[in-house]
Structure formats: C-alpha cells, structure tokens
Amino acid sequence: MKPDTFKDKIIPVTTILLALVVIWYIAAILMNAPFQRDMDGRAGATPTTLEFIGKTLAQPKPILPAPHQVAQNVYENTFLRSLSSNRSLVYHSWVTLSSTLLGFGFGMLLGILLAVLIVHNRAMDRSLMPWLVASQTIPILAIAPMIVIISYNVLTGDNAIAHLLNLDSDASRLVSKALISTYLSFFPVAVGMVKGLRSPEIMHLDLMRTYYASPMQTFWKLRVPASIPFLFTSMKVAIAASLVGAIVGELPTGAVAGIGSKLLAGSYYSQTIDIWAALVAGSLLAGILVAIVGVAAKIVDRAMGGRPA
Image (tube, rainbow, N blue to C red; front, side):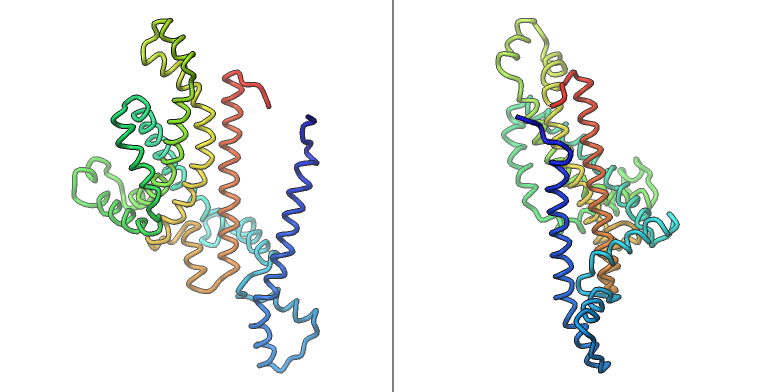
C-alpha cells in the first residue's frame, strides 16, 4: 500500500479547518446580529446588509467573536506585549505551564509506582485498580477547590509537612495547583504502564526463567522495554490532561496569572475576545506539549532499535 504523502495529509486537514472557519463566521454573524440590530435601532441607523454584517464582526464585546478578532488578540498579546506584562499570553501560558509540568512529573511518578505495585502484587491489583477507576469518575470541578485550599493550608500551616518542605507562599500555591494536574495525569500513566508491563508474552517470560533471571532482571530487561511504547502513548494523554488540571486549578484560587485566571477575568468583564484568545493559547500549548512527547517517543524508539513505520 502506497504511504500517504505530505500533500495527502495536509489537504484533508486544511479543508476541515476552512469549513470550521466558515461555520464560525456564520455563527458569529447570527449570534451577534440581535445586539447589533438593537444598537442600530436606538441610533436610528439603517445600514446595508454588508455594513450590518461588518458591524456584527467588529463588536468590542461580541457574544461570539469572529476568527479574525481572536487572531488579532492572540497576535497582539503574544508578540506586541512585554513578557512580564499581565496581558501577555506568553506570561500567562508560562505560569500555567509551570504547574502543568510539575503536576505531570508528580503524576508520572505516581502512575508508574502504582503500575509496578499492581503488576507485581496480586492484592494490590485487586484492591487498587477499582479505586483508580473510581477516582476518575469524580468531577474534577467539584473537588478542585477542596484540594487546592486544603493542600495550600497544609503547606503553609504549622505542621510537620510544612516544616519539612519549608515552601514559601508562591511555591505552596504552585504545588497546590499542580496536585490537580497530578490527579488527572496519573491515571492514564498507571493504566498504560500496567498494560505495558504485562505485555511480554508467556514464551518470553519462560525464556527468562530458563536463563535463571531474577525477578529484578526480568523487570528491567524484559518488562520495562516492552512497556515503553505504552508509556509514551499514555504520556500524550496525561500531558494534555495535566494542562487541563492546571487551568482548572487556577479557577477556584483567585489566581492573578495563568490561562485559568485569564478565562476567569474575561468572564467577569464580558471580554469574550480575551476568553477565546486564552482558549487558543491553551490549545496551542497542549498541541506543543503533545508534539514534544511524540518527538521524545520517536527518539527513544530509535535508541531502542525500533524501525520507522
């Protein structure tokens, strides 16, 4: 079968993207028209159809901003602002990214540790897996405020954990938000690693026994290499979930920086263009993180002797 060329991949994606942009413009015109009609009625203006459409696509606080308004906002707040400005999307993205990566790191460690325990201990398999699945049925928006507030007070209070870690208020706030990312990211890593560690065939495990390999040697030389593809696949899901967790973690804390705070401020002041720009920034950030994980997976696969598909 002839492999897909770059052209074969680009044309379908571009066609879908253009269709979505056209639908977005039509929706913007329809949703902003009532307010514009009301404004024209009060001003006694009688614009032509083209003038009316142009006004619906140029409102300062539209119900649904047009794509070019969002693109202009993203460009201005990305390239024309100082990186330390609280209007810069780069600044807000970096704040969210820091808690995303911290939470993702915690989630990776927790997920891998749980997977190892589940694979090597039947009691842990029977007791932990149902709880892991059940943990993901709880709406994150419901427990995020509790997790953030409780963890922040524990980290800044007068207790053994606070004295041991000795974090300042900024670091405590960062860790508190990162725990939401950890909560969302550990599950796909744990499930993927359990499947990966169990992926070696019985024949390969029997072969290791004939070599008198110890359980530790079987783990490092057979189970871990077999689990790497599963780990990177689950990491792509986990890093995107971790970003969502970081944004959700910023909502209940009254954070003044981060994509979540940008969304919250936009909703307070009806700045719908800012809201959509923050959504675009979050989407681009997620795409970049997933792409980095994908590149890392290919590098590791080549290093382990894998052949390109």
